[in-house]
Length: 366
Image 1: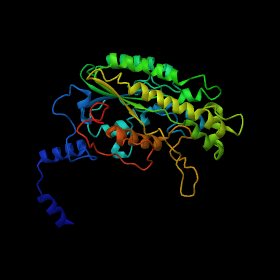
Image 2: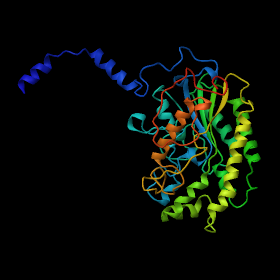
Image 3: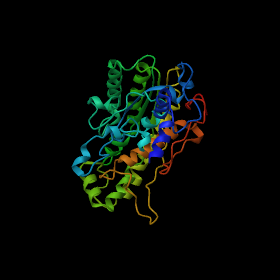
Image 4: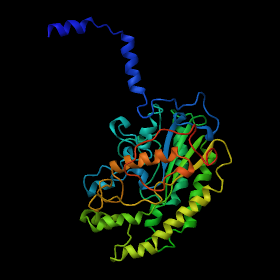
C-alpha cells in the first residue's frame, strides 16, 4: 500500500487539465460526438436551421403533451400532470440518465436549451415553462393556448423573443375524437382544420423564428382493447376517459365504422392545410408534419399478449417509458426527410444523428 501511495503521489496532473476535462465531460455530445451541429452564425432562415441553433422548446395541444398520469401509482394519481416527463416538452432528469424526451435529446446539442417543463403541475405553474397544453384540450382551445404561450414568452427575460430560434410541438385531435364517440358530427374534420388554421395563422404572425412540429392525429380508439384484459384499465377508461364503446360489447365494430374514418379524415385535413403551403410564406416560420403515430399498432409480447408497459395506469396515456419512446420517435421523425419519415411507431428505436445539413422542412428537402 505504501508503494501504491508513493507512485500515485509522483503523478502530476495540472489543475487546468482537470478543469478542462470536467467541462468536456459535462458538455460533450455523447450521441453524436463526431460533428458540430450548430451554425457558425445565427441562421436567418428556418430552412437553414441546425439542431444546435435551437434555443427555445415549447408545446401546446392535448393530454398527450401534458404527461397525464405518467408516473401515477394508482387511479387517483392519474389526474396529476407530469409535465416534466412529457415526450415533447418535458425536461426531467437527462438523456444520460435514460430519459429520452425530445428536449433531453435536444439538450445534447445545446445544453442551454430553455422552455422545457419540469415536475408536476398544470399549464399555469412556473415549472410548466412553455408547455401550454391542456388536459383534454379540444382543437378549439388551440388558438388561446397559442396566445397564452406567446404572451408567456414575451414576458420571459431569458428569451430573446425576436432572435432566438424556437421549436414548438403541437398535438391535436385526441380529445375531438373522444368527444365524437356518441355522435360523429360533434367534432367534424372541418372543425379541426378551422381551429388548427386559426392557431397556426396566429403563430405565424406572432411567433418569429419558429419551426412547428405537428403530430398527426392517431387512432386512439385502439387503446380501448386494454380494457378487456385489465380490470383497472377498464375502470379508469369507463370512469373518466374516452367514452367509446362503454354501453355495449360491439365497440370494435362500431369504432371501426365510426372513429377510424373520422381519425383518417382528421389526418387528411391536416395534410391538406399544411401542404397548401400556407405556412411557407416567410423565412422565419414553417410547419412540418411528423406522422409517426399515423399507423400506430399496439405492442404485443412474444405470446401475443398486449404489452401495457408503455402506458399509465389507465392504459390510455403514456407512462414515463412511453414518453421516452415517443421522444425518440419525434426526434427521429424531425431529422428525416419527407419520404423517409416513418408512419408507424418503432418501439425499439434509438435516437439517430442528423444526416442532412439542416433540419428537413417541406421546402429545403423533398
